[in-house]
Length: 265
Image (cartoon, rainbow, N blue to C red):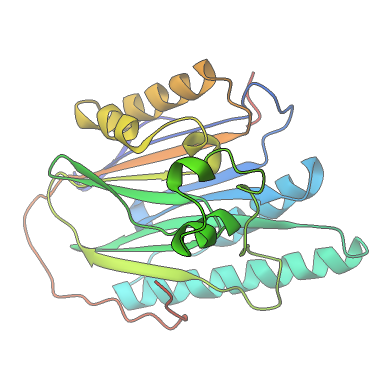
């Protein structure tokens, strides 16, 4: 995917790949810098159902369109997720209760402000002033075990149930989303990814990949590293670099949602 610039403010790179093991890519992505929206959806439920689930979520978010304020953009996102969730619940009933759902990681930006919204184990990272921070918290059994002191981070990397997620779009009648938000600073870099990346690549390697290259080059480098290490799952990466070009408006995020802290050869 090519880089995009919108008002010289955002540089975006994106890539999605089936990986070395799986024959189908169940990931989908949304890149709408003109609307201040980027998203990664990772499907669950097997080849057809997983791809259908993530595509349903991506299609709903792609239709959000431009918003006049940060609050409106967040409200449109929430409505889009609710609609996708309802559509997936309908499809589950049509398929006799078959497993179907998708994780979701979203970056929203309006004026000088950003919000990260997520459900599941797809992640958003923020690289700022030479440091990388995982903005999202994984909704997984492994993360719950880490926080209870029953697993270390290193032990969780090989724990047999490390991929069992505790939230996903389409699994329950009402989606439960988390949100974090803040003010953009010049040079900020956001990395959105499915767990196909973080299964193989450490945070410090993501930091190095984004440090001195363009957004698309960083995506390509992270994909290459994942493929080199076996790419046992689909991998999707979006990199968004913020270039401050002056001006600042006092827009506030006012979330309505509950806050809880390609196939390719």
